[in-house]
Amino acid sequence: MENKIQRETLAEKAYQSLKMEITQGRIQPGDALPEEKIAAMLGISRTPLRAAINRLAYEGLILLEKGKKARVAGVTDHNIAELVELRQLLEPYAIQSLTEDRLHSDFLINVKTNLSEQQTAIESKDYQRFVDLDMQFHLLFSSEAKNRKLAEIIEQINTAFNRRFAIVESVFEKYAANAYEEHVQVYQLLINGKSDQAAEVMANHIQSSSKRLISNEMKEEME
Image 1 (tube, one colour):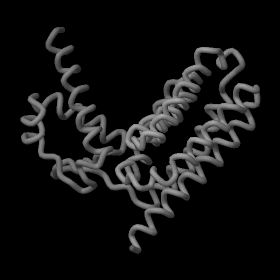
Image 2 (tube, rainbow, N blue to C red):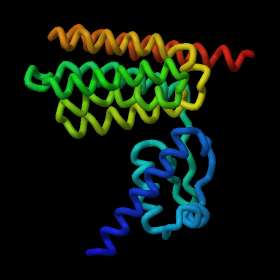
Image 3 (cartoon, rainbow, N blue to C red):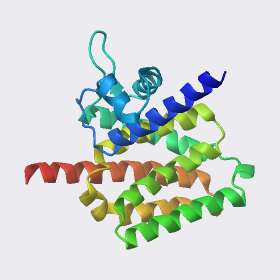
Image 4 (cartoon, rainbow, N blue to C red):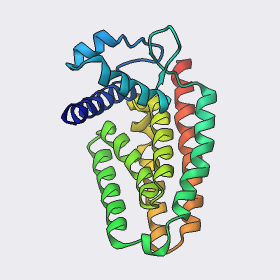
């Protein structure tokens, strides 16, 4: 029993470490993930590492092919379009799923606190912190909706989406203020009991922020 708990703990450690390396761009799309080398680097055996790799493969961050080493999955323009479409469907739905009793003071305080921290991150030009807070903001609504599977799916989609842009600090330096203002609109509509309008603003925000990010990326590629 103790050994099983230890393996699960080590697998979680490996999962979190690898996920951070991938989502922050330190391991690039297409990079191979040699088990022996990574296990040694993390100070664990290959058994918990394989559990972590399988979990990341399920989330779409790693590609597993029979007879080949695991490698980091890429994020194509087509993938991004699909992710945006899913976010526009699921995140507004999560907001609409918030019944009146779910819009309690503790939840709204958490949203307001997140917004305050977003503003602080922008003022201090800590854009990596802003990226983290932006993702937390979007996940607050699905978590509060109390649909565990919905929350898991939205987190996976946001993780995959943010991988494409999170390491491009110049993008968030230009557009963080816009995203923050749109987040505030969602919050203000919610505290006024206008969930349907808040959901609509969220859908528009996802579309506009995606366009800003992709447009900036195209400009940088042309320069």
